[in-house]
Length: 108
Length: 400
Image (cartoon, rainbow over all chains, first blue to last red; front, side, top):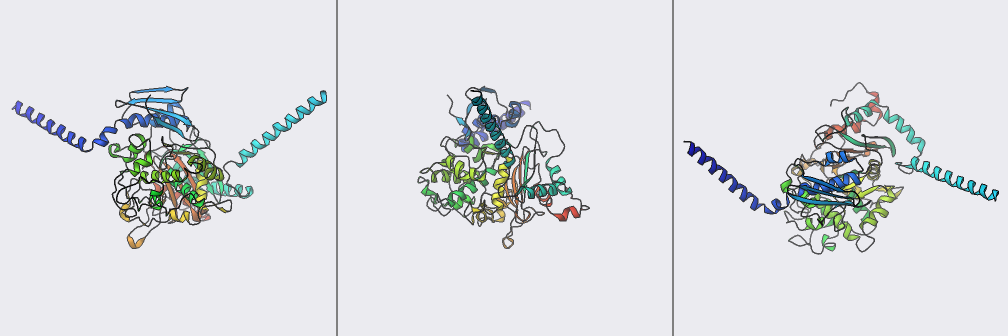
């Protein structure tokens, strides 16, 4: 009786994983880039909030926060660069000027 | 020797006072729309801000609440700037925001892109009837040779596009374009999308079309002074707008659909340009019919195209409208507001509303979740804030 329930649970899990894998492969192009969004959004929008909108550091963290938390944040104030890591992806944004504000940059 | 010293002191004193006067002058001039006698403005400011209806409108946008903390479903205004009869009549900002704050306009940027494209047509850099292929020769596919600038202007390119934001980021073409696969050349990303319809066949609100429109504008200026020089010297500066940032991708194209940062007063000036039918300082700044082109009900728009979450109204060209087409079942989106209201709307509470029959322009920046603010209510209160009829019938209370 117990084995039967266990088997059923694993079968269900297998079907679920299989279904998810199919869904992911069908939409692979979206899945591939999705995790990058968290760090890219945080880095770019924090940079703009601070250097363009000229808000406080505290406000900018609050303003930029998403439902998926980031795992690291670092800031090179001399180079006006923000590094953010989240969802296993790293992103870098830099303030490039008064008119063009902040931009996502390739990782060094 | 002594005399020389005196002269030098005198001269520097004169210089200092001249600078001081200039400084004072610049304060006085700031935010003022040109060609308006000051006296008249003082009068309209007084008359406007003492009415009960005005108070009702402003207190809707500034409810008493703690002003910091996370973005919620409660109304939170970062900045408000009102022009009435070409006069700055009211401004108010949340703590840490001011008239000098360049605020992110999000999708209000689209409407400004529409204005800038009109300016470029006026100056002969491009025309709404031009084929997009003229500027992006690599554009291909079955409709590559029929897509025109006006289709992009009217959000009717026919490109397949998923306009979703943070609630469904996985399939969002907006997020992908801005932050991941499309980020280095955003307009090119849009032009790589598959076709979902023929150009002009289907109206579909799309940040992609706005970005592509900005791409076309940038390309049209590539052989001239370039997009940023155009924006600076031929678009913003003549409108008395100096403090702006329009973020670009690595290809140098500004984010036509999302990342303009601008002062509330400057945004109101752009609204005034719309109110004046595209004329500025008595001259045609935009082509004569450009405002009408953008703010009529788009010829491609059908009632089924209305999408409650994204829509700021019925579909215009880079603007939202309240106009109707009853024979096709397109009714008012804002039942309590005039049909001629014109609206730019951005994510998380950014608005520019123009009420032509009231000569009223309202620029409002916010930081709240979409849906916190009821647009019909805000627009109604704004519209009712102008005009004698309300101060006379103060017994009629506005239901919220």
